[in-house]
Image: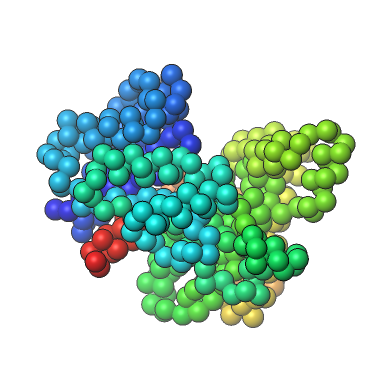
Length: 401
Ligand code: ADP
C-alpha cells in the first residue's frame, strides 16, 4: 500500500501524520513541541496508544530525524522508499497559487518571498519543508496552501478601497485563510447535496474563525483578509476594527506598531473582553452571569450573524445550506441554537432541538442537519478535516505527473 506523510509545521512545532492510500487510514501521528528550546518534547500516537518523550530538539531537522526513527522502530515502514509523497500545509500563496503545487526550487523561493505576508507562519513552514527535503531527497513534496481556495474571489470582493497603487505595487488585497477547510467542506456538501454549483455559507469557527461565501461551487467571498486578523471576533484576535484605533492607541500608550499588532493578534478577541480565550471558559463565565463573559459571548455570536447576513445578501438569499464547523461550532449546542434563532425570522428556519442536542463532543453523532424539516435553508454541522484535504491534494498532484 502507498504511504503519504502530512506535515503541519509551526515556528516551534511540527505535526505529522502518515496515511495509507487509497484507504486514507491513519497509521501513526505525532506532535513535536518547543523545537529550539531545551525542554522540547513530543508525543506519538499509534493505534490509540500515546507515547510522550523528551529531549532537546535543536531544529526542525531533529524533529524529522526522530519522526523517521519512530516510523521505522514502530515498524510502520521498513524503509523510507515506502513513502510516496509528503504534503505540507503552507499559509500564504499570494496571487501566485490558486491550487496546491509540487514543491520545486521556484515554489520554495516563492514561499520564502511570501514570508512578508505570513511572518508568523512561513519561517516554521519553510524549516519543515527544508528538513523533509533534506531527509527524504527522493520523495516528492507538495505545498497545500491555505489561501489557494479563495483565489476565485472576484475583484469586487477582494479589493480594499485604499490607494490603488497599494494593490499594484504591494499586492494589498483580501487573500482569505482556512482555505483547506473551506475547500474540504465545500466538496463534502457538493457530494451530500449532489450538486456541483452549490451556494453555501460556511462558518469555520474555532479559536481562529472565518466564514466563506460559496457561489456556484466556488469561493466568492471570505471574512479574513490580507492576514488572518480580519473578520470575525476570535479567541485572541480582534477581527475587523477601525484602523484609526492603531495610531490612537500608539499615541496614548507609547507602544510601537509591533506591540499593537501583538495586542490585536494575541490579546484581543474573547481574551481581550473577558480574559479567557477558550470558548468553553468564556461560556462558563457567561453562564455564571459575569458581565464581561456575557459581553464576549454576545460580540462573538453577533459577529458571526453579521457575516452570515452579508453573504446571504451576496447570494440573493439563494443559499443551499449553511455549514457550521471547527472546534466551537462542531461542539457547542447552545451557540448553534442561538445562531439559528437569530437567523430564523429572516431566513425562515428553526432549530430541530433533538438533532442539535445529539451532535458534538460526547454526543452520538458528529454530523447532521440541525434545522427542522420545513426550514427554507438547512443548517448542517460537519466536522472539518484539513489533514485529509492535504492528503488528497498531495496524492492527486503526485499521481497526475
Ligand atoms: P484552532 O484549530 O483554530 O486552534 P479549533 O477548531 O480546534 O481551533 O477550536 C478550538 C476552540 O473550540 C476553542 O475555543 C475551544 O474552546 C472550542 N471547543 C473545543 N471543544 C469544545 C466543546 N466541546 N464545546 C465547546 N467548545 C469547544
